[in-house]
Amino acid sequence: MTLINNRIVDLYISCEDEKRAKDWYLIVLGLSDLVMENGSRLLLMDWGENHKPIVDAAVFSLQAPDIHKAHTELKLRGAKVDEVVAQYGAQSFGFHVIDSEGNAILIIDQAS
Image (cartoon, rainbow, N blue to C red):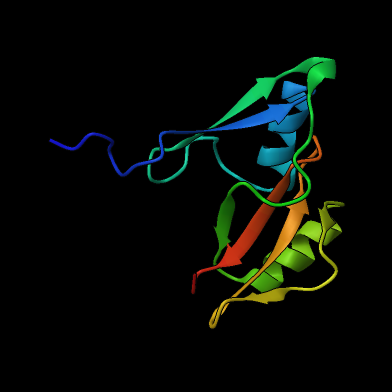
């Protein structure tokens, strides 16, 4: 029997305003749901004024089938993104986006 299963169940995302954050993830980022394809859930934790954004480094990444299109489209939607798509490792490319609550997310291509 395994002590800990090799599966992420939930990602807890701190926010100041849960509705604003949910709108950002669904409308700006374009997710269809806060439940990922593998069943993991993005749980928006409303901390109000006690929210402390994570902006130094991404704590999770999401995959984009066309990294350059995602970068361009998110810029057009007004999202705060890195200026350029950068190389990560030998074959992967990605960029950071800052959500409505100041949390950094890494958007990575499918080669990762």
